[in-house]
Length: 368
Ligand SMILES: *Cc1c(COP(=O)(O)O)cnc(C)c1O
Image (cartoon, rainbow, N blue to C red):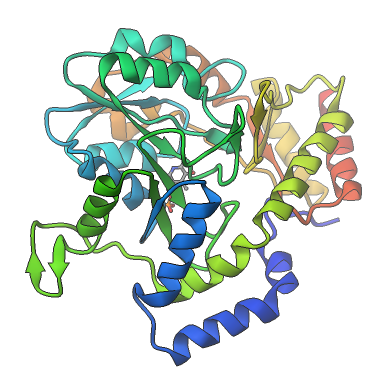
């Protein structure tokens, strides 16, 4: 049985007619950059996030750096985030001129360990970027309390968590600003690069829109130097179609995660922890195995036609790119240990129970 890590083709085939018609419309109407298809999707996605404003941008990384710039973050500032994420999170901080401050992850959820935040706050700290990693919201209650106490901004990195919920509130409305990626493999994925910024604050929204579009107020009247990072019409039209299915797809992802949990129970692998009052959207299904067994497990899965991945094999502060910060891997004990133990199993809405059983049995054969 051949089982990929994600299966974008079968998803496309299930909605092909609608997607093809949407692309056709955009081309016929020459609405390539911005325009009505982009606006329609922005409205729709803001509503989906129970928020007010959505600014479509070129990708999720730009969404983060533009949002920070709109909040006035730049040179001399510090921004706190988590060691366990994709480099886009910290790259975007550095992009603004600010310094990235990494914290270790929570031992159970892989998200930012909220108990470590306060000791890292200095008079330069301007913001916290919690990452809702693998689709599970970070522990936003304590983060909000700390942010309030020290007057810090919260920028959600929601690139992996479209539609996830924290204590009944949806991701995208849990901080000042939220940033989304619509990279093809994300839970809501375009057919190219795309991203969005979501906020309830009209001033932040207006600033983000100006920055994302060359700092312009009108065609050739530029208030400042911005960047060129806009949502294109074709991606917006595709995303608008796919958004109609997102709740259904998310439900399938959650069901699939629980099937894995059941089939892997007692196997000796550590399954994902979903905290109380949380509805995770399982962008990835990540297990942990003893580090000395991971390669063997990956090999055996591969022999059986099953793809797996590692998200991420090197925790951010341990990357060469961050050597200049002078960290030691022992400064991040959990992220550093887990980078050698984590393994992402295939996860997508179209995955079926037979496949999950087959994958789980292969895992059991190696681990038990
Ligand atoms: C994908 C991702 C991003 C960046 O999104 P792009 O659209 O690829 O630029 C940012 N943060 C996290 C956690 C991601 O997974």
